[in-house]
Image (cartoon, rainbow, N blue to C red):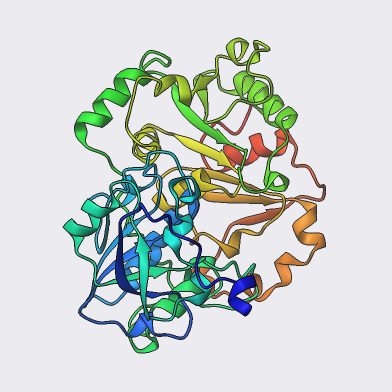
Length: 389
């Protein structure tokens, strides 16, 4: 009777091809004990979560072969040619959970997976992708959010999941007191980079430097930098350093009010308007030309932090830096009043770290972080001069 209210798995439309494989979640340790398997990793999570998985990948058992995918191929370019986890396409371009295709999340309920053989729906091009990769097992985890409640060495979201996916005896071989290595290479083909550079050259001169301002997350509005503060920052920056051009992934405020044109803003969407490549590939091409980044905790900030070669200012209004990315010597994180008022800086993930995992964090005694404070932080990470001209 309980299955009438809590079905074991979502329904699968009868017309969708399917296969049957042992399917696992992160619980019970069964996945961590797999050896000699070809494992398809279903990862229906955001861009930042795909970045973070790049630190888990090197710790997985080398006795298996892995490939990651989701419905919507905008992120799979991150793992194209990566090691030890590759990727394969779903054939579905826009991000989705499969409901519109007749099977939500491949017809699987991650809570009910325990290594038993399950029917797995294969919409889009997944039948041919599965045939090519020939998986013998599937992993599907909801990537649980510990929110700073775990102490070192499992203080970040990725480290906490790694503890469930990697056997303790194998995990002990890694020095968890050092920043975890990132398996992603953050490069694209020379041809795509050339085409992107040519498109970008229509908007900036060779003398200009490029600052990514990525201050709008899509999962939780409370972590965003208010548009009026970001716009004021851009105007201050133009006076401080006219050669530092700002590129935006999303508009700041009304894109039709003329402000973007007056401030000579570069729109990422305009630069890539004639491209058909997935977002991740185009974003990687952009990162190769960035001189600095300002961001809230969303995919772009996590990607720049993982590259570790671009000066970065993180703005934190609802979370805390030690919970997510590995420490980055080129990053300075400004934390507003709300995370401090909620005691996030006192949770185990924030208080148990060794000096080898030091994060550069400054607290701001206000709920909003002023444009002037961000401009000063940008100077202190070396992206602009420390004084006005």
